[in-house]
Image 1 (cartoon, helix red, strand yellow):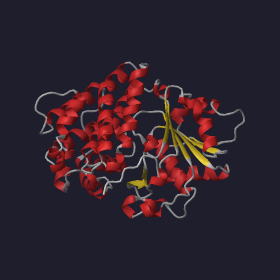
Image 2: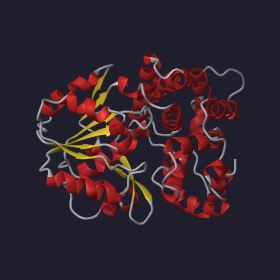
Image 3: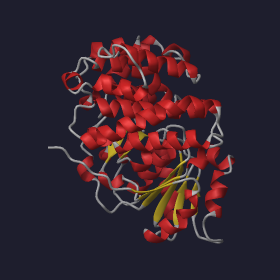
Length: 381
């Protein structure tokens, strides 16, 4: 049976940051913990958030979010939440800060260790509605975590896992494209390809959810047509708006599930936590597109042709080759690395990456079940 569920109240517009106080009042958050990172703080975005709150408004701050959020960072942020007698969370930043905010929302209100709430440990049923209310404010256009029900976190044992529940969906998302105007070209490229990967992978998932398919295709069209412009013309407000819309769309469609791209990215991200998730998605996407082209659900619904139409790709697309090569070319145009070797990934890492990919929560929702040999081929594509 298909479950179709959209729950986040989304404020989307240039200047939407002004609505933070209104959303705090609606959610009865009087003492928020602001979760962010040093880069966002140094870029002046934290000051802009604080300026949108009434003078003297009580709040606590945690700005130690790492590039890939960890269980240790969750503990530190929960300590700040408790010391500040907080009653809600405002996550300001990219997917890392928002995912860390979800971790705080969960662990400030639930007992035990983080591991017991991981999807692969049967943790979905252990997450209750008593989570702290969360307002998510993205400053990148990539993960879409502001409307997603999952947080991806690295456990103390090194595994990069999904913690997933409808209770973790932020109660409000404030999507202000103006917050992305100062984003560097490299980060714009990596997060933008992340959004495109989300739209493609969730569209290809076999789950029956036509509304999500339509949202994913719309997001793909906007992202594909705007990414290069956003990289080359960083002050283009229309391109920034469309990239944030693409990011939002991909995440709204997440409830269909993802697949091998994310299984591999999660696995490698746990092995090498400094690697950017969006960059990894861009690298794995071409091989996975070709692998999935033969899946019965993909061929039955003409999904390759429908994606090609959204991306403006003509010619024979049924085998996925033209789309895969277009993705590879786009990654090159926006300046992303051409292969895993450029990131320092060596062949001796492959067995552990494959082992973790096959255990990842995204492995089972790929439209075509991948074997260890299939993953090995994707890693050397």
